[in-house]
Image (cartoon, rainbow, N blue to C red; front, top):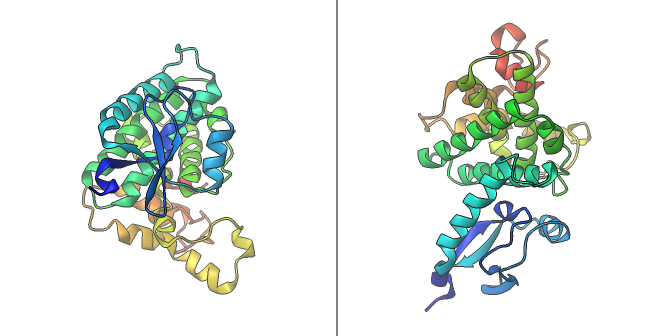
Length: 268
């Protein structure tokens, strides 16, 4: 029997935190599954940083442990969102940020999946509620280093800042704030698919590279065009997040009066 039948992939970002894992975790090297971490240990500190430095997106558990893995996820995220659980704010922020990244990556893998879209939307709703209710969480989330220049880590940062700005500006509609935060999380969907190198500053791009970069907002929106379930605000954020209120942005050179105020929050 092929080894592939015995294992199922999991996302590295979902293993953050100090909870002990009740299953063995494997890496796949040259078609072979190698034990990386035994059950009873945790993914925090140097172990997590080593994984991030390798830009490893997926690891594996045995099929027999899949239900145990799902239970671990539920416990981990519930503990992170519970301010009374006795965990440090930074540790909780690491777990929450990792789960937001994982939900975004799951949707990016299949942007026409309505199931994946509603899953990431549900995750964002909980995320927005936390930002609006717990002091210090914004600072904790933004203090986490994006050492591997991850698109989804950047998306979580933009969603965090945008939500905090909208709430500080007295935006009342939780549905609109959630859609705005979701658009912020997903705004660079095209970079995920094009593998564009975002490690440098746009000011350092060559004319050819910058021309490619300028196309990513519209190309990202076009990628989602067939997904009729995507709200218009989310689509507008993806296509307009590089616009400026004076018309100097791209790709369309829109001005303030032509943009939704919540799009401008994300663009800022």
